Amino acid sequence: NCVIDLENGKGSTTHIKGLIKTHKKGKINLRVVAISASEQRRDGTYASNFSEFKNRIAAIGLGTTDILKPIGYSGITYFDWCVYAYEMNHPIMSLERKIHETLFPEIQFSYKEFCKKNGIDISSGQIDPRWRNPKCDVLALWSHIYYGGGIFVTRDTNFHQKKSSLVALGAGEILEPKATVMRVRGVLWLLWNEFCEVLNDIWESIID
Image 1 (cartoon, rainbow, N blue to C red):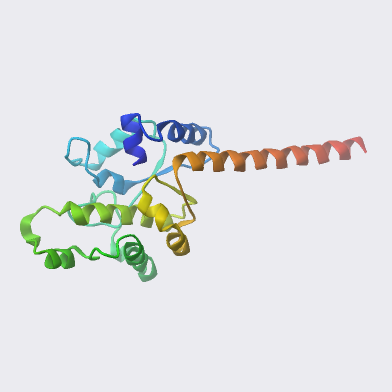
Image 2: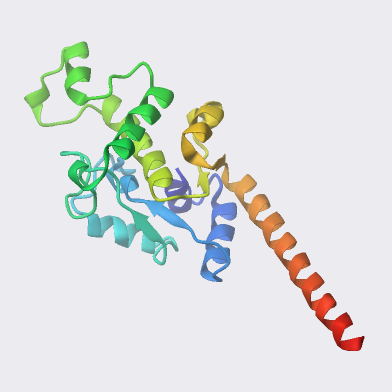
């Protein structure tokens, strides 16, 4: 929803732009989850290729960020910007299921199971958004944890309501954009104070 906020100029746009500015100064490292490219656009369509998504985020100021590859899923992710199961060890793969069971315990983990439960023809060629959208959320947090992210920035209430369980899985911190800005400012202030103290110690030693 951060990408959507930036595109619409609503929600947490001001705070996200503040984070982008701090990123461009080299003080923090912002990263974008590639699974965002698989989410439905405002016109109800999906990007036909991953280059479209790159151009999309570049247009809103995120062109210098790293883009984290998700686990590959046919019909959802882009074959040229994802990682496949055989490239990862089993513990990492099991993380996806744990995240899914935490965020969406009422939804079947595999699309095959979902279709069977809901009487959907799996060969229809179109993945049901009731399964696709939750899968995108799962892969967003999976990417954050897999690539060692510190703060997962989102306004999605589902993540915040289940924060403690997700943190236990390795999510670090889960904060809204405004709270993230405040946290970053606090950390930078502490670092500045420590730097000033070091300079002061050096100055006093020179005088002595």
